[in-house]
Length: 180
Image (cartoon, rainbow, N blue to C red; front, side, top):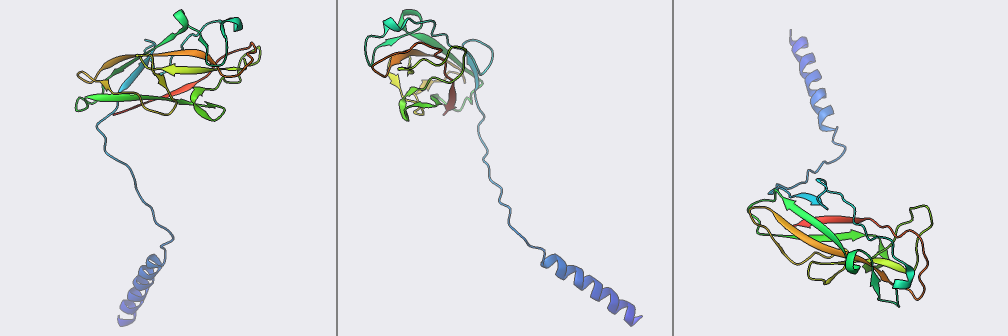
């Protein structure tokens, strides 16, 4: 009987020691508890993605570096609707980001997609509702939230960034980030 008890104790002890030797790493858990997020509607599309039409612009409309064209009256509207934002927040901020033209966050680089090749010498310029130039990756002025909602209008146009403009497709994609 003593041998059986000793055998059980030795077996149990070896299992404990195996478990003690099985420490091969560490796992950290990270996260946060948030107040929620807004629902974003772009261009009244009912979705968080939308299309802004800058139109077909003759290259003759560009008169030199810094000149702009595109959209109705030279500006295309970017309508953003925020809803369902936390009612504990009184303001939101919007930032656009994407591929920078020549590594500079002043302008959005035209993308390499389309049938006719990409236009050169132009990029896309973003502006807030007051017409102030918005750099990529930089948050907007505060947008007042009323009961967790807001409608805001940004603008976009093409801007000449090089001496010569060559025709082609002039498309780009920007990411929209909303913060509080």
